[in-house]
Length: 252
Length: 317
Ligand SMILES: Nc1ncnc2c1ncn2[C@@H]1O[C@H](COP(=O)(O)OP(=O)(O)OP(=O)(O)O)[C@@H](O)[C@H]1O
Ligand SMILES: [Mg+2]
Image (cartoon, rainbow over all chains, first blue to last red; front, side, top):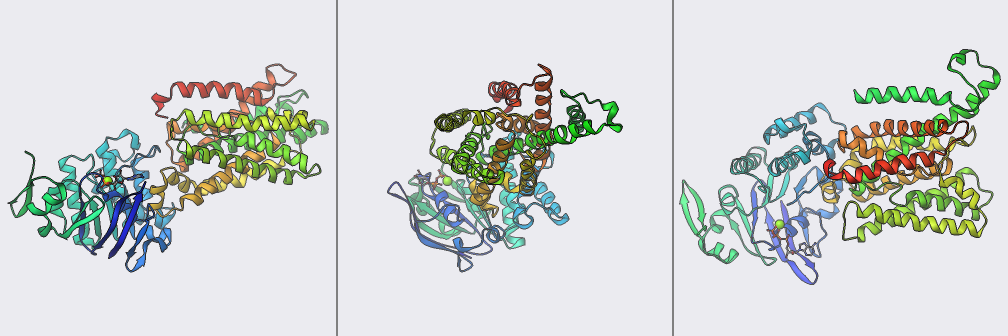
């Protein structure tokens, strides 16, 4: 369980995250939603200790996240940022192997290799595994990064817009994969996501940010409603029930 | 396969290097050397060969590490002021402790090289316009400023002659008893190999490294420390070898990619080969005189550097 208590971050005298408290439940998928600039990425980066917070605390299983030993934390929590423009020329397989780095410091054992193979297979990357990253399309690259996070095999997985650049087929595949990791392996997943219908169909819990504040928080059922979404995005939604899922119509 | 050929060439040129020089020494006589010929071999030719190999290897690896850590293909001991800072360090060492041993001089040179590289890295942090070509230019300017301080001090204290020796790399003076300092680079290169994964990951950025549990700052400090050690020992013994740490790693990574585990040995082989060939060229071109290797490496190196600059789009540098 991750307890986010009253965290804030100020950039140039603007509070871009303003006193946010969230409880991320173990064994669930939690989605952060909100408009561009709402503070989702900043919040996720503070939760995953990538940037320091100005106020508040983040407790991972009861202990402040920044007091963890780096390497120990890397075995429990992984994070993928929104944009990863990495200039280093390495192959997909080398990248995915880095997922095992916290455990092996570079010396791969057979079981590590097995996990790497599985992660590559999971993300449908067999055909590209020996290609350099800069020779891949945006979506293929994104899948390679996710494969690395899967190989890292942590209890907590934090992903900032994992569906970036992905086509519908692969978006669905990744959301299904995340769902399976939660249901079958007991992982805890936190994602920042813009596609509200993917959020609706796959998450257990939704946190809505607006202007740096947490404006609503609740189960998917509570959150995917005309009133809540209107408030969060300042636009009209029409939530319909299709095949047992709540689908938002807002295109016209 | 390519690297087998490179390895073979390395052996070939190494043997060739042993038998080129003013004192006649023929491969045929190898089993019937007179004591005089043996002396030439042991006192001069073999030390020279070893220094060439170590210097070429380690300077290239130093460049590889710097490029990885700065995420810029054009950063190297030449283009970041590291070499100039090391040279200034040697001069300051001579001024402050005229009776210093080689090891003490080494220490001062190391500290200066380290400080110089840090200053450059700090300048990098401050630069907003981070174009790939702009950065080495800033580094070259920084190096020149440090260089002019060295020259100024040298004039002031009448040491210009001694500084000149380090201005152009020169292996002809490296005889028994004067090259052994270079051996420092051997363990340094081994440490670089052990931490190859760390350097590669650090090259992917601080956030990426943190996610994998790597202490980014520590790895950067370690890398720059290794670079400063290598540069100081090479400048102190052989002198400046400009552009070596720039072109060799770039050529290797075009084919091999940036994972240090695989590129480091090839960089080592190619670096040694490059210096060896430059040295042989310098020794035969105006035989029986010699052109200093600083000049041959500089001319060849800056030519290749320009070529890489012009072709960088097609290599994605
Ligand atoms: N390093 C920074 N310096 C200054 N301002 C920043 C910095 N990072 C983010 N901001 C500002 O903080 C606010 C929140 O940014 P954040 O990246 O968290 O938004 P987001 O919710 O992830 O948006 P998006 O959906 O576009 O990814 C924005 O207004 C942004 O301009
Ligand atoms: Mg964002």
